[in-house]
Amino acid sequence: MSETSKNLRPEGDLDDVDRKIVEELQANGRITNAELAERVGVAASTCIARVRSLVSRRIITGFTATVDPRAMGLGLEVLVSVTVRSGARQRITELSEELRGLPEVLQLFFLGGVEDFIIHLAVRDSDHVRDFVVEHLSAHPAVSSTRTSIVFSHHQNPIRVS
Amino acid sequence: MSETSKNLRPEGDLDDVDRKIVEELQANGRITNAELAERVGVAASTCIARVRSLVSRRIITGFTATVDPRAMGLGLEVLVSVTVRSGARQRITELSEELRGLPEVLQLFFLGGVEDFIIHLAVRDSDHVRDFVVEHLSAHPAVSSTRTSIVFSHHQNPIRVS
DNA sequence: ACTGAAAGGTAACTCTT
DNA sequence: AAGAGTTACCTTTCAGT
Image (cartoon, rainbow over all chains, first blue to last red; front, side, top):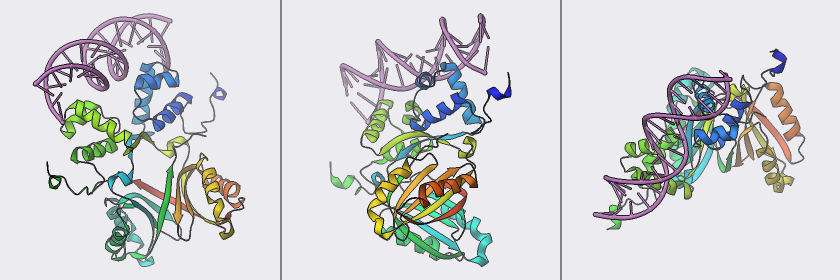
């Protein structure tokens, strides 16, 4: 009954069962509740209650299929760094919201530092990159400069509780 | 029966049904086959065959739960740009594989251009960033320089067929 | 708060058209 | 590719611990 039997919440306020569930669902988001329960070592009824709690607490924020961009005809990925004009700082939010809505944009990092954004794009080809930069960045009054780098490869890891 | 009735495969060789399936499964990876079939407008038996085909062709590469790093005790995200010493180019692969295995690493972009990598980290706090950089980057003989930027916000979009 | 069993529902498979 | 019918399994609930 002591607090010392609980860890000093080293990672959020999840216990071992929650963490195992999160780990398994990151590795396979389509696993059935029955199998998840077995892997985690709790009853199916317990497991489904835990998963629902994790979702309602917004610890798990969603379930998605991961798709290969090349299979969708998007053979080129690039990272575009954007610096905003110092006189146009207040327009960063407006610009970022515009960018978020564009289909080429896979990810948008809103940064502190020299660069204000990094945009991760998946596009058909280099012409498509140029069109994107010209149309949405160079033409925008808030944008000071951009720098585009080709992504040779891209790896994504699950979040690990370590 | 003519080729003209098929589009000039504007995005891979997926038809409208495949594309709708991919779209729905990115939005909700845990949708049931019956509901997916209804939304896409095909029979359940057709739908499950399509999904399996997409997975076996590696167009859909997996299903995952998305997790809030903050809920896992990882309250700080940063992007670290890494430049490799010009005399140590051949060690990039070795370094990237080492980095991929680290629990703090969410994403790794292997780049062409001035910078060789960008590492997306989720960490507890700024001490954790420093430890990571010192331990895994500065100490590495192939690393020439690093630059760390705080991520204020991060958005991720599904891949859209446009 | 977790478990286990029972009931109901749904998915998956096969065959046929 | 669709539909029907069968099987099997999964989800859900609830009472008990």
